[in-house]
Image 1 (cartoon, rainbow, N blue to C red):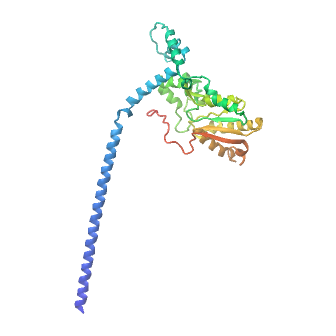
Image 2: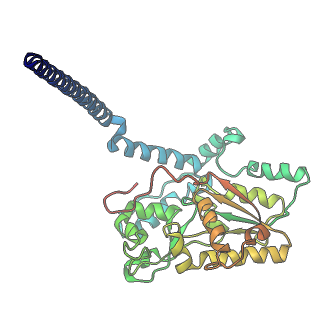
Length: 357
């Protein structure tokens, strides 16, 4: 009896020892697998770092390549867009631009550019009509086709621009910002000249106060008003101008067509708090509805689409617009969005002293 008990105990000890050895072997195999996975992942990470470094050092990704390329493209576009009548006054324009920034050059002899003007006219006349970038009558073709089909203005239209197409101008009379007064600091050639010759002051004008989200002390930037405010970003880079031109063919004008620009730097809350933007837009829409007897069509571009979605909630809120739950249905016929940012954007525009564009 005692021998059976002894054999049973020995058997149990052997089984416990075997299971311990199995556990140790499993643990060792697991550690080996983990080590192998770590080495594999480390190798992949190093390969990715090496690949990123190779991409980083490709010459066409460097600023020293991109910046000169931008200059060359800009000069080329300027040559295409220049009008023949601008050539004789070219030296005068350059002298005025330099004088604006206090740059004085010795008097240069006047050049006779009439021959250049004649050659330029001859070159432009050889360009096929559809490829000319100046006004040639084709910009009204869509409107003429609509008019030929018997279409005419019906619903009032409100255009809501995006970031690029919303011009901003300075209204500050502080001594350090007076050079910008009533000049566009976003959009137009005045912006390009300031970026080139007065970059730090231009950036200080556009930057918002990090605490208040509004203009910093001394600066005062507001959205440019009127349809011209968003017609073109710069000469040749048209935005709303072609849409306005073709709407005009079917009898739209400033009586039934309105542009609603806004300071795109501000939060939606501050748009209303500082500028009363949504209150003014609500009044404009209701005025159109009352005068024309028809609901309004809103056409929004880019960020303007998100602004309108916020406006629809704001105007019906009992705490804000107080228009009631049926205001949008009663006053808005349709919302047309062009490249609307309904899902956000993949990048942001940085306006800081370290990073610019």
